[in-house]
Image 1 (cartoon, one colour):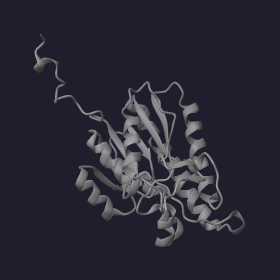
Image 2: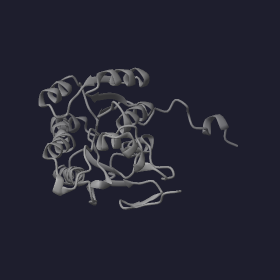
Image 3: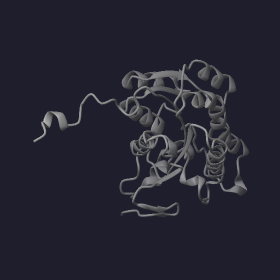
Length: 261
């Protein structure tokens, strides 16, 4: 009989992210913070960026990451962030958000511009700036955290759905342009995710934000999305997760949500 000590898995096996550096944008809260924590646990050397320095430093200290100030809407901030990096193997483009629920007829163009600037142009800035490093890594990953709002539209969501449709087509186009190069392009599109800030930032009212999830049994949480992100970037590098759509079981479609009570 084989010796059990020789056939049992070794505890000294390297973690999936060992030796790789992952950058996570919008990491001061929500999906970004959960992703940073999960990637650190997977052995990645994690660099986190966001505007809120106090939250960023606190998270970095708790998970063993490196924190750098970052405003993806500011070209100088992006340049300074990128200039402080020695290498990058994974870029998680998570920074984004929704800021209104207005109908198109009542569109606030300042809100539209803000939404596009953060979700689309900020993502393009980071991707363009870090592509040379991702290519140089020999096994790079560009991961876009988009949304089911980038795949289907709904009333009252035009500014956000337009921006996330932009992120979706950005990922598709980049994948075509990088075909044959050692860089994967991955898109994770979550549906209903309950976080502390997303709906509050969008509605500006805590009661209205709470109503979004009222009666929904087990909406997704940030850690669920982080789990999918970590899985995608730790597959063998010849495996590309082009698009992963994730929703809570209670959400069959953008407009179809089971609510209890």
